[in-house]
Image (cartoon, rainbow, N blue to C red; front, side, top):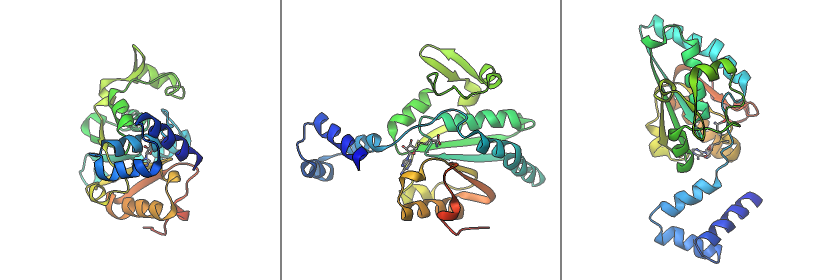
Length: 236
Ligand SMILES: C[S@@+](CC[C@H](N)C(=O)[O-])C[C@H]1O[C@@H](n2cnc3c(N)ncnc32)[C@H](O)[C@@H]1O
């Protein structure tokens, strides 16, 4: 509540509105949607960096990715689809792109689609621009940095070959209509996002990933402090 209070108060000052009641009325009756988006942008916590939670990524790279690739090959398929849900400024989806280029044999023969979504328009813009500060790249192994990044004015930029693997889209995980279109993924990464949701919403989102978004045999990755067992009973 402290966090919400601080950010709403700051916004009221910026738009020269004196009370929350008046602001609510403004949001409800006068806003064309842009103020609501502005408020959403202010409410989100966007902490992220490249190669965050390394052990999870190791499990993805060494076990899950190999398993899915083998199963696809045995069915003569060559497409792998990944959804980074709550991607923030893009470090997570670009990290996944780097791992796939490193780990998948004959990567050129595969069609890799990484869809990165977030509710916050500002972070999506940063993700598309793809210029990162020193803090964001601090955990990138040197070997990968030399291979997949360029030092540019203002920071560090993943190379075109990595940027081309990721598409950014605006999406609210609580919006059932747009969520319904998100299907046929082999992997869903939703790390450090659901910690900000209440219990019912959390279950709704995870059940959606499991029953609607994920291909059979696919994987959902949550943050390392999150446990699916506490959220849902969904199982294969
Ligand atoms: C802490 S960041 C996590 C970034 C990345 N997944 C990671 O683990 O490094 C959480 C992100 O979730 C997004 N988010 C929060 N609520 C959301 C919602 N309802 N729909 C989509 N994204 C949401 C926020 O905008 C924020 O960018």
